[in-house]
Image 1 (cartoon, one colour):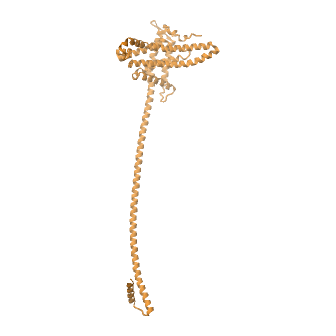
Image 2: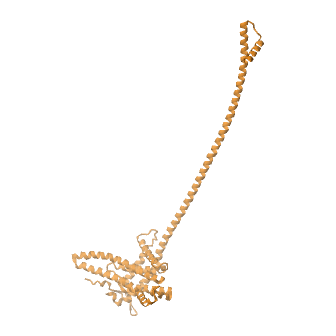
Image 3: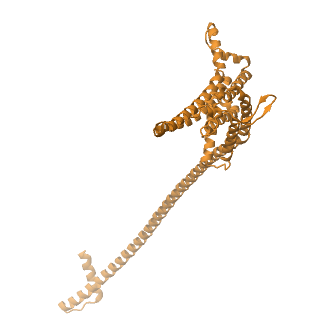
Length: 163
Length: 240
């Protein structure tokens, strides 16, 4: 077997040493730093993107929190407005009711006054009519025409008695 | 039928002799040069684009790099970082030597015991130096298992010593034998294909299977060589 022929041992060891040393130098100074840099760069980019994603997520969460706060605030505001509007309306309604009540009371009073006046008047008229009727009736029945004043007195007396 | 060991013959291409020592540039040396040129070209050209999402070649280069990086991290630990370029060069050198040998008419330098032994000795001497540099004479405790009764030292120390010193041989012979035997089988089978004529189809089918197997062995042996180096390195750094 040629493997055990020592003639070529020295040359093989020599070229093994030369090529392997050269390969070691090429690998350690040229190829490996390049590959290492590529891998490192990728890892850095991945880390960067993860960081960015985390940052964006945090930002989104802040935005959501802000939005929710604004929503709660506006809801509270709306409720306050609703409440104040309701209060206002109740107050107005009460005021109007009071005003209306006063006016009605006034009108009732005025009406009563008018009724009283009409009653007085009517009563006076009744006496006049009764006097007239009594005078006419007396004249027809007795043929004597009495003085107005006498008749009036008599009617008044009769009315007093009728009471 | 061609001699199945003829493929391992060293042929001087450029004869060279320095001080009586034969340093001729041979077919073996040629394929070592081809191998390191291919490795360097592959690993530098593929990552030239520095693509964030790697293409096929860049992916492959990254896989080799991370494969060896993980191997060192798992087997040696963080202290192994320093030896990453060496283990990586070793792995690529053996891998490309094995794979180049699978191409017809090429020369497989890893099928030569002197080459594999040269690599194994570098690993062995390097590991031993690292061990003594880190632990001083305490590294000699490697040869006596911790906690064993003192009386057993008479037996254990020689056994451990022999097992430690046989490391470069096992490392060298494993790779050399796998490559040599694989290539001989392929050659003998190929001889049968020609000799049997029409019935050559049987060894031909077998040859297909063996070729696939040999590709697997080429990768596996490179891995074994690198991982055993890692384990020896781990022993030297952490002791047992």
